[in-house]
Length: 174
Image (tube, rainbow, N blue to C red; front, side, top):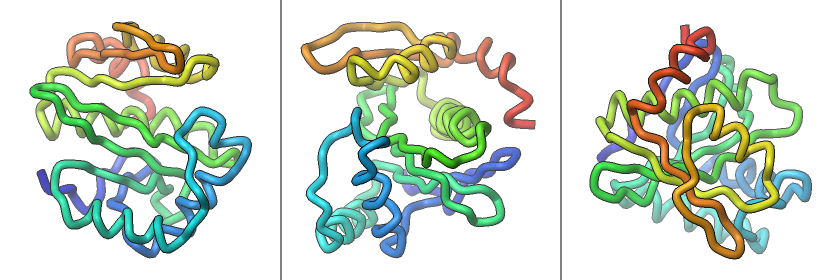
């Protein structure tokens, strides 16, 4: 799977990450208000650049910058861990000062891409326990909890379960 150059929504675009985005990504990942529920990073810019270079050399994952169509970067999101007919998505970080539509539209674009463009039947993902806002967000989309461990809740959302949410939130895509 080769990542498209960008996936355009109503106001948001998901564009493929570039090495030049390393500093922005690191700033998001090191922000104490945004990194409470994600894996830790050590803040080494060279390591972030190397990670992006490795990502760009392989072809199974999709790592996007969430940006407004004017080029203002609001966050990141990834599609990875492909398992048969299911994709995982995560690394979803949206700046605190992002417009309210940025999170909703970026999530919808992930599903539009995963279900519509790539043709997957389901999405699987995990959310850290204690990240109640994100848990509720996914449940409003129709995702169901399929398991848990000490740190995470594991979810699945099928293409069929997504259909009512797509209709409900269509104003973010039109």
